Image (tube, rainbow over all chains, first blue to last red; front, side, top):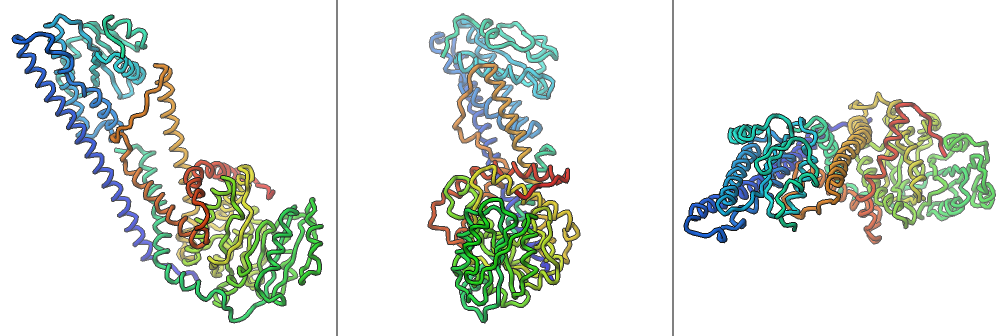
Length: 216
Length: 411
């Protein structure tokens, strides 16, 4: 006759559950580390911007030569990349990710305003692009546009691309949308105060950028 | 919240992990008893009479080596009978068999082709010895293999003993992949033997008490997997099957993907069909670990591999389509980031690592049992790199054929 030891099945279940939850625990541990890293970058950018703003306040007493682009945070791209990865990995509805995304959007706007003021003060042409996208499935061309803008950003190091999620619940973004009178048609791109709707390939976008932008 | 397809992956991985842990725990539980078994394998209380049937169909290349290996067995010649049954070969198999006529009591039979089970039954009908077994004509035994098997029959409850099957002289990559797989099989079979749940009495040198056939009847066609069906039938009647892990048999593994595909398609399809025929054994505690563990685990493995492969293909497909889009947009591909940040640290990654480590441990344990530690361990590397890609080939087709109840030809 066959023997059946039910206890063993329960022990195995306990051990399997232990391994399973250890994997979940390890995953949470590393994911929290990643979020902490993203927050750290965001904090660093906040300090960079504060420092730039302070420097701008001192502009009266200094020359434009001293306020080069280098004072503006160079880490926004890295933050964007990592934030987008974590959003994809942990899900769009993760509270921590959502709050980081809001933080990132605010930092971008601050950076945008500051660079605009510096450009005006020093008589430079704006080298900023505002990109409004959505990843809620209502913008089939947004993924393609994202690739084009990443390419442009890599090709023209001086170009600053600020991307905003159309659906992000943040009053500043709503204000930004109303300033440029941007409706639901996406993707929307603002270059030199002019709004362009729909997908623009790299040739079209390059033709809209200031001619003086240097390639890498 | 995870999507439903991903949540299903977690469930499948949990159950697969459960099966691995079950075998691992069995190993830890039984390892001392297994070690003790090894010490007295060569001292038999007596030598029961044994008949070995060699069914062959177009085996002119390997038959002589197979028979010679049987003639070299360290077993009293007056207790060992060898019957070669040529199942209507169309090559020179019969000429090769004739070379052994009247040599050490070897008996030859020739019949019209009817499939392996008919060749076995043909010889079984004339068998009068206490024990009887089969050796496929592409497999070879070592000198002490039979003694190490017969030892287990000293336990009156044991009705059949399976050997440890190794790949004969693996050289090509595909043979090396199978070498690691067979080593894993050696581990599995020993563990399954320890919990009375062996699911197959393989053609290469499984030995039975003649009583098994007298009680349960001869081999059946059984969807071209008569060795599998016999094990199912024995479990149904609560006949005990054990494994002699040090009784080595080497078998010629298919050297081409086409050959391997044909063989495995037959095995998996046969397993699924027999599982349907014997579905009353499933999840039935009356049949012990065979009904509660072995059968559900095997069927589940087939289905979960199919799902996981499908899931992976969809994900790879999405990745490739993203890359194509990127190339179409920009004409260049971004270089891969080396930042550790982008390493996937999802729970599934850790679970797959845990499962791979357990599999690795099992292969090493199998290699140690098979005394295969001196060989290069490249077979393990090939196994992990390639096995996952080739298994779905026959799994998909086997499930497809089972669903449509198609027939698979024996050769």
